[in-house]
Amino acid sequence: MHTQLAVLGGGPGGYAAAFLAADEGMEVTLIEAESRLGGTCLLRGCIPSKALLHVARVISEVEELGADWGVSYNAPKIDVDKVRERKDKIIATLSGGLKQLAKRRKVTVINARGGLEDAKTLLLSGDHESIPEGGRLTFDKLILATGSTPAMPPSFDIGSPRVLDSTGALELADIPDSILVIGGGYIGLEMGTVYAQLGSKVSVVELMEGLLPGADRDLVKPLERRLKKLFEDRIFLNTKVGSISDVGEAIDVTFEGPGKFGVERFDRVLVSVGRRPSSQGLGLENTGILIDQRGFIQCDEQQRTAEENIFAIGDVAGEPMLAHKATHQAKVAVEVALGKSVEFDKVAIPAVIFTDPEIAWAGLTEEQAKREGREYQAALYPWAASGRAQAIGRTDGLTKWLIDPKTRRVLGCGLVGVGAGELIAEAVLAIEMGCEVRDLTESIHPHPTLSETLMNAGEVFLGTATEIYKPKRSR
View 1 (cartoon, helix red, strand yellow):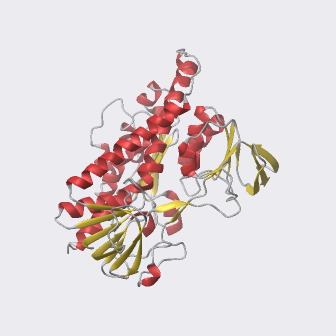
View 2 (view 1 turned 90 degrees about the vertical axis):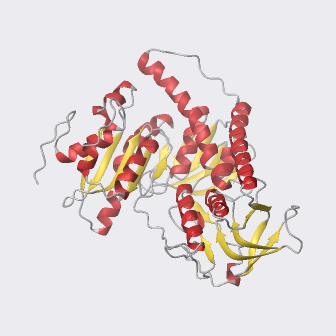
View 3 (view 1 turned 45 degrees about the vertical axis):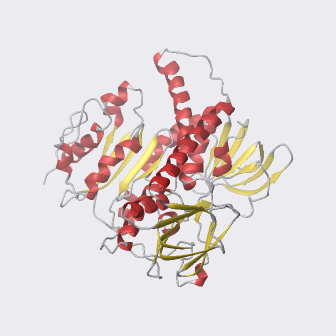
């Protein structure tokens, strides 16, 4: 079997590449090891986690009504089977839609695992009827979109069903009385939020001195304050997990550090220490394709690997490992495969942490600016000055711009607060277009909304903010 374009991996990058290429008239074959399209993001990542976080957020809002507004309800009754069924229904609906879109675009979908025999041939394995006779697929061009998998250190991989990675946590087999989250990154905190709101006693252990290492501390502080309450002050920083062991009905965990020392027992343990690129077992050694020390496939600005006819996109092609980055890299790879002169040269790739409050940022971060010795000025607008934030009882937010003091162009933006993930899109557009801060402040934003805080933070820089006092900045 031969195809003009083969795409290995049916996640957000893979199916986006296959669909665009088909729309452009290419003959496309999409190879996916799972029985359904969607990849990690749809099947066991972004979508199911956000569905569960929605449930957690509604529970939290009801609690806030009782505490702040005098509107009380009985304690929620959690039917975990119903919650799981609803989550699975969302996944099935979206993956079914992708199947129909592939069919309408005449994309050939093969359910198999693929490995490179050489730079022109894929060896396909599996028992699905879609695999061609002989198990070989030759191609003119190939896009590698194999994604990533949860990292599981060998010391934690003890073969116990009580030790979960993010995939296992999202299956929501039950609501344990207690669960330890190893790792204070975004996946662990998102899943910790879900389980805490559903009724589990959640603890978090993090090796570093703060949650979300690498994120702006101004943005992390409001989240950390809220999580301390939600997790009943059981966040252990500067602390290492020495060992874990299955003792039958629970897991014994040994802690080593100033945050916590000794042994404690938990019903479940969620290991959330990052993700690793799925670059092993692809037969890359049979080609000239190179990988770096972390396992990422090396490619240029056009997503080309060392083999001119093979491209790599998404998680397997490097940081940041985000679905929306994969989708845009897919477009670049397809356009280059069609002979167009384009590059992946985005200035601002937004990142969102869907905790409560949400954290989002795009463009230059303050930590990056300091590391690179770049000149900048920060302008912060506290949501306590926002009428909308006051009205909804969520004044724990903050909007922050990084601005070039000479050109007054916006370089980066950070947000923490309810709906930060929705608000960051305006910042992405402003940074990509090279807007000056006055472009933001003179664009009328609707009142009362949280989107105003993006304008207000620009006014803080100029010294013209209405709701807070800051002396006018001289030129």
